[in-house]
Length: 197
Image (cartoon, rainbow, N blue to C red):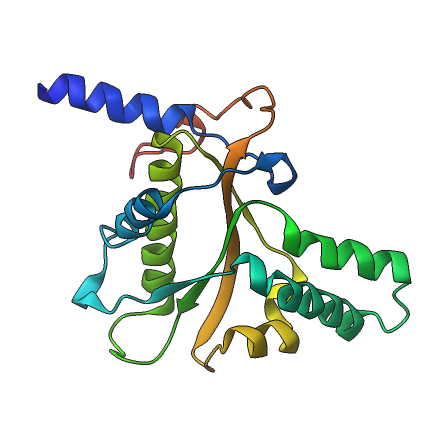
């Protein structure tokens, strides 16, 4: 494939990717070989001094109940008066999407020369590589976050060290329905030239 054709293919992949919320993702999810491809894509992220300042924890079906209880406990940490309906809604989020994993960033520790911001960029690149690979394989995917990520219950469940931060959940699966693609900003909306006025 010529360089121009390769660039066009990559651009088409990037620009056709869109977020598909977990409630719109159904089975089947990636099989073992596809999951291996998705996870291996993370290793191609920029990683100054090869710290690998990120890791991913897959939440299999038989562990979703534990995650559901951590979500409920997290809600109670924030709101001791949460209703049974609110707690049920919190628990339900653990059971969406056939593939669910937590992205964790190690933003300190190890080499003190590598600042937290650089580590976070590396983690973001790893995540984007995984999203693009999932998209290339025909799956939909989404990143989700929320206040539960900083809760004691979630940190305990996933064994986060003091240097680590839960960044987001990654959900992957077969798309039930897509929404129309959103309008994306043109480069002139976010690019300037130093000294250009």
